[in-house]
Length: 178
Image (cartoon, rainbow, N blue to C red; front, side):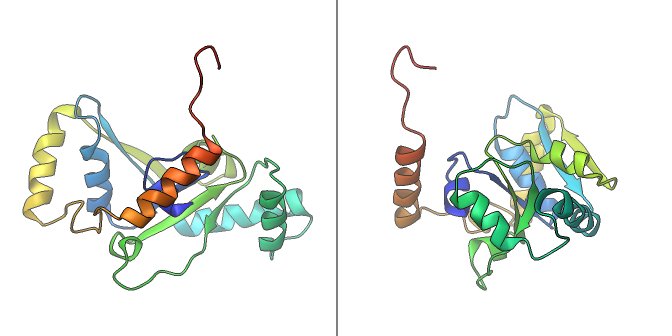
């Protein structure tokens, strides 16, 4: 999912960073005509609220990883959201980005809305006006905060994997299809 997410294939996950300046880079680099957004929330409070959803969904307060795997493997959509635990490799792109992932029980869940519905109170959104994005990108570049410094480089094997995932799960629509 992480490989696919970083290549713009629709997934059930969103990647976050603990570094505000990296968030600013990601918010400013896309669509220079549109305002950028940085979403934030209190991770400790999030983890607590995530744990509170398990009894209603799986009948137990913790150790739900196997239940989540069964739901996922069976292809069932579920209304949960959690943090995805994975091993960070030193120097890897996710390590450099100070990244972590939230993953939802189904495709199309708005993670920010779900975080709100879970009851996380410490959260918010910062808007970066479109007219300030170029200046912010220049300042970030001067601090050597760039896509390249965060490990975004052409990665042919990962690009091929993402293309296979997209072709298998998201085939192009034919004319007349919805």
